Each structure stands twice: as C-alpha cells, then as structure tokens.
Image (cartoon, rainbow, N blue to C red; front, top):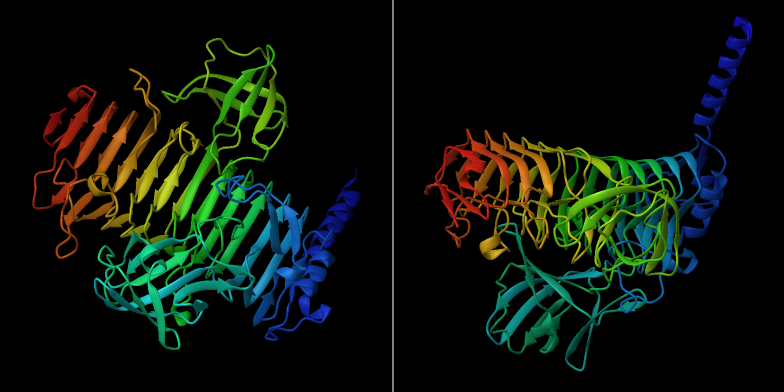
Length: 606
C-alpha cells in the first residue's frame, strides 16, 4: 500500500470511529419524558434496541425520574452464583428492567437521572456485552424489599416503633404484615442498627411476629408481647427482609470491559451487583448507600458487589458502601467436586453448595488445578479440551491429557484461567454487620487507602474452602497498605480479629501453605480489644510499620488474648509496628515452630 492510500485508509477509519462515537440516541426520541411516574420500561427497551449494532453509540437520558415496572420487563432464565437453591427458588426466571445482550461499545449516559424500580426486579443486566459504560445514574426502589422501623420505647412486654413511610404494612387481626408491590413476606431476616455508634448486629423479628400490633397513629405501632430477650434500645433501627435471593440487584455475565462510573445504588433486591465469568471490570465513584433525604438506613438486601469466576482486572475505586445486609465486596471462584471418573481423560463434576449451581464453570481451553479438599493443596494441573453441563448440578469435562494419579473421592477442580487481579482503592465501608472484603483469588491483590469503619465481622477475610461455600482459591500476592481500620469485628466474640486469613483446610499439611505473600503494612488500626490478625497455613506473611491505637468509650474488650494468632504458618514477620494500647501485644503460635516468626513481640506456643 502506498503512502497516499495509507493516509486515506487511516482517515477513513478515523472518520468511521468519530461518526460512531457521535451517534447519540435519546430516549426522548421514543416519546419518553422524565417525571411522568408512568411505566418507562417499553420505551426504554425500544431505545436500547435502536442502539444495537451501532458500536460507539451513546444512549442518553434527560435528568429526572424514570419508573420501571415488572409487568412489561424482560423475563429470562439465569442461574446466578450464591443466590438460591432448588427448594428456595425452583424456577430461575429473572425479571429484568434494562436488558442488554450482545452489545458492543455502548455508553449509557444518565445525566443524573433517577431510575425507580417497582416490585422485585434485576435492575440492569448485561449478557455477552463488550466495552460498556454506565454512568451518572441513581437506582432506587419505590418500595424496597427491606422494611425499617425506629424503636421509640422498649420494655420486656412492649415496644413502640415508628415505621418508615417506604415500608408498607397492614395490621390484620392484631398482627403486622409487611407487603410490597405484588409481594408479601413470610420469612424474616433482621438486623439491628445502632446508628449513633455505627453498629449493626444480627437480630430477630420473632418476638414482633408473635406479638399483638396496634396502630396508634399513621406509621406508629405498639407491639405487645414477650420482648424480654430482645436487645434493641430506643433510637435503634430494626431492618427486616425476606431471606430468599430470588433476583439480583444487577447482573453482568460473559462480558468484557465494563465500566460503572458515578453510579448510585440506593437499594438493591437480592444479591447485589453480581459479575459472573466476566473480564476487566472497572467500578469508579460507586455509591451503594441509602439516600440521606429518604431517611432509610439500608441499601442492599445482601452483598454490594459479588464477583464469581471473573478474570482480567477488577478495579474498584473512590466508592462508598453503607447499609448492607451482607458483604460489600466478595471475589472468588467455585470449586466443583469430582464425583466420577468416566474415562482416562474425562470427569464428572458436581456443584456442591445449595445456592450455587446451573451455570457453566469450565470452558474449552481453560487451565485447571486439582485440589485435595481436606488440605486445599493443589496437586496437579491440566487443560480442558471440552466441557458441558449435564444438568443443573453436574458438568462433564474432558482434559487434553490423561488424568493425574492420586485423585481421591471428594477432590475438587478449580478453574485457574477465570481468576482476576483485584484493586480496591480509596473506598469507605461502614454500617454493615458482616465483613468488608472477601478475597480469594490467586492473581495480584491491592487493597490500599480505604476506610473500614466498624464492620461487624473481619474487615478483610481471605478464606478458600472446599467444604462449605466451595469458594476458591488461594492467594499468592496481596498488599494491604494505607488503610484505616476502626472498631471492626464486634460481632465475632472471641474470633474478633480485624483481618482473618482463614482457609478452611481441615488437615494441615507440613510444608504446604494454602496462602502466600501477604503484606500488611503502613495501616492504621483502631482497636477496642486485643485481637488484630489471625492467619492459618500462610507463608511469607508480613505485618510491618502499622500503627495500632486503643479506642476508649467504645465497646468492652471481651477476648483479652494475643494480638496475633498463627496456625501452621511459615516465614512470618511482625515488627516495626507502633503500639499505643493498654496491654502487651503478643503472638500466639499453634502447630508451628516459634522460630518461623520474626518479631519484636513476645511469642507463646500452644
């Protein structure tokens, strides 16, 4: 090709890309105006369809409110990790407000619009999409599936409470019934929030369910019954929801290069923003938190962000998580158990956890690790030649080479192709009764410059298991730096460690470490009790140059044990830390030589 041809070719490509980038599709062109409070679903679906096969297009909304109802929403079957069992939800059809399938290079520009959903729905769903950007939008529900009431008076036989106006109820024959748009509530999961101290604890709706309810004024109810075991106090807020994860807040499946920017989730029904077998996910300036003007305290039914079997990069920055009924961020893969060897290269596998099944967990070309369940030791690797779902619970995989020797009943397969790197930076986690971060991925992890404020359980949990949730896998490169941890793990009793490295291996294998290369450095810990860090089966672990101070007038210390508990670890460094606490910090070692710890603190061996 001569120089002139090259110039014209390059110019043509530039003009083509410029033209595509300037293609703007306004929902107003489809007769949709904001603030009508009518169902926007059909017209938005028409606008979405107009963006199909237009790479570089922008789907644009005018500022204002848009309402979405389930009646005209997309209905499609999806199996979503960590959601519901066959008994809990036998039929997996999801109700989807905004549905995108096989889209390329699309930007959805909200311009500050508010999307209000009705009933129980998946708000957004991206399926097999690439280069998607969603920005400047707030999502809420007209009637959240979470009910909230503020306690006014509490005695052993009587509770008076103010019910939030968004929490619809009826009193029938002296019994309070929660209801919403085409739903009622018969199962109850309750969390009690002390908003003054920022503490969220598990509670129970049972004494209220058994009591007699009397409405004394609109949204003011007196409950009469046995409240002798109820722990609430005036000013606390009790939040109540159903326990069934029948939908998800948002679902991203088999996608690549997804950007969520300046995106606010004021409430999500179901598991949260679930990303499953997707690649390169970038979430910036996310706010999963209730809107202060509404006066609610809870923003999610369960997790905030859940990543199952993803790869490439996951980057979460400048975001705020507040008011969640479960973990703000959970990143993991899934162990499938080997149920049968059906040929020299073929295995039958089974999904084990009751809430995780039905999706393809392995693909042709994927690399795998064979894992002994009891020790979590990866003892061989291989590559998938073919994979297929046999049924909802079982997969069959064929390897390119013969199966390794030593496979035993109960061993697992981990997909090590679909495992991501993770960066969590400049985020704040608060008002959650569970953990802040759950991290099990063998790629690089960076957790830096975040604030973990009074998370009910460990601020950071690094697990890996093949016995309970079957969430894989081992970590190999983790940096936890520049973070502030304040008043965390108060819901865990004697296990109230701020950071827990806790693989669920039931046998310690001498010389084998499940996790490796974890550096906890230059952080600030504000603690109310002795425990700081627990680690098991971890090699090359360092806790250095951290600042640890004591919280006065917060919660009573309950443990008074060692600051560090190490079980079966190797090459641990704990030194150069600054302590401003009213006790002598110690290191307790279990099933390991004390010489494996290099420290300037006293070491006790159990």
